[in-house]
Length: 401
Image 1: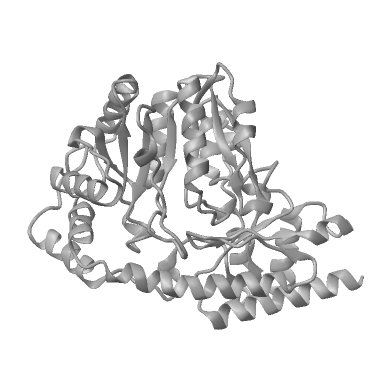
Image 2: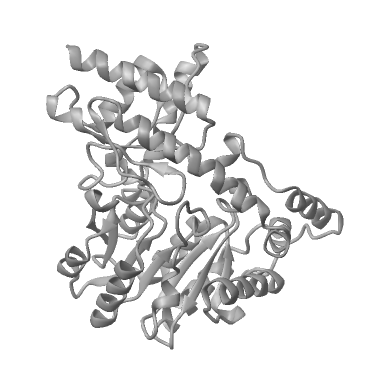
């Protein structure tokens, strides 16, 4: 047998891994309540109508060929206008590249910037791709602690302790996946200060920037004066088009990132381009009505409040309150009872016993995510209530034994 590559052996994406046993149950006719995947369109959210029409019209008008590798200039200009208006940050079109979702931005950037044994500081817990792609490049992901008792804010002192002469960047995910944390302005400034002191760039993932409940998200580049910041963003979440796969990267610097930016663009040209008609429809997203954002956040806020209250009522479970995105990251307090070997076993036991699907916390960080699970707060209140009732029954039955 021809063997798969050695580097492919470590590829394991927890969020979709847990769907495999769930599908087996569904093949048997069992209804599974899915709280695992961050796709609002799987629930009662839908893409704004003017965006759908723009997509259709772009196809009818013949824009079905390749787009420029860096993305259509019109879309990059629209993003630049948004950044100036929202965050008071100036970019040129050469500083932007449109990609196939934020994941491709991340893949290309780490390919362009990491050599073997380089280190990347990543929040713990984190979106799994940061660890996965870093390892795929034979580099080393270094988790820094986020403090659960403080709403999962980054531990700035821990970031400082983890920096070494091999550190190539500090990752910030704000609002955060999987915890739903919204980072304070003070914390972001402190991280910027450390990055400036050690002359490393910040990689700021802001895909959920306008999905917040009680206060405004603060863009990292707004606060960074002379510290280079590489920002990821896209349309999947705020504009409800995860399947369109349109993301982008923005380079904010004074020449420090010229080499990495050049390498990024060369790799981007080698992979051709992001989806042409979806790019054009995303221009309509930025220039058209924005009313859906408030409607989405109002719905999510109610679901956040219900989820936070309900999960904290369940014996053996506790959770911090998310302030953005659409995730909640409860702690399995009952792990201390030795009822399960680890949080993945907990998740599979819950799935097979009560047919509720969540994602094991260790899939987001083996150190700071363990003994937790991630759930989405996207379903309607009736579905969330059914799911949490099932979890409560599950915990009661387990804790009786």
